[in-house]
Image 1 (cartoon, helix red, strand yellow):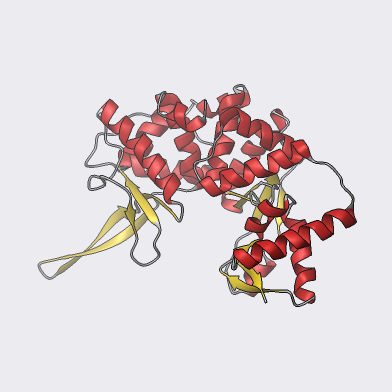
Image 2 (cartoon, rainbow, N blue to C red):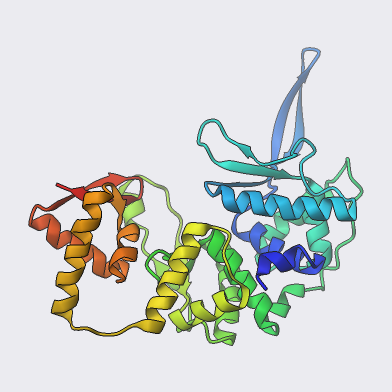
Length: 332
């Protein structure tokens, strides 16, 4: 019984998880001034940015579109952009996107009430208050349905499964952390409270994340904060509400959970030599492989694989090349 299956069965669960998706990934309907011209006259009009889900992950975009369209047709309500009969691919960056009707967030908040992020909440309420083409639905601002995540373990696990498909980092090396900017610090505190409630984290407080590397590369990064999920928590979350939609992330999680269950210490020297041989044999057949790809072959963590690769690089047996945010390895 995965969370995505339940989202298609129960409207309440769809809305709960949609609130998480909205906070973590969907662009906010912030207001802006539009300049329009008509018959040589210029007008300044108040406008709002679109509610848009845009990702490099077509698997998740397609799945969420499918579930949303199901509810749109079943309830006969406006949830998706009028011209969207399927997700679209952007020409300039190749990412997949969905546009939502402004009523989508109105329907979601009508069901769940207040959400635990001030920025997302306030931008949504402003957009709903300025609806013109649609009749807005009243929202009970005293309602807080997301508190169910503190009493319902399955829903809590589902919120983290959704987060792992979207915002979590470190899934490739088995050290998942929810990391977001200061604008979402209140949401992070809420999710940390849930993780602590169910024993899924060892963190007592949020931890600041260094942004020095981003600043050195000229990126105007804002302060970041995070908390981690422990391996026992990752296993329970996955068992309760998995699988993930993203097949690569799902493979990584299952790999690290199984490693944790079946770990046997064979001795450092034995493991090192065996792993290096496996790496070289694999790279001969599979050049341009990532560190994550290689860990599946050696059955070791990413940090251990990276140490082996660095040693092989010193011995001039392998070389690496930068590709985006990661390194690709091949035989020299």
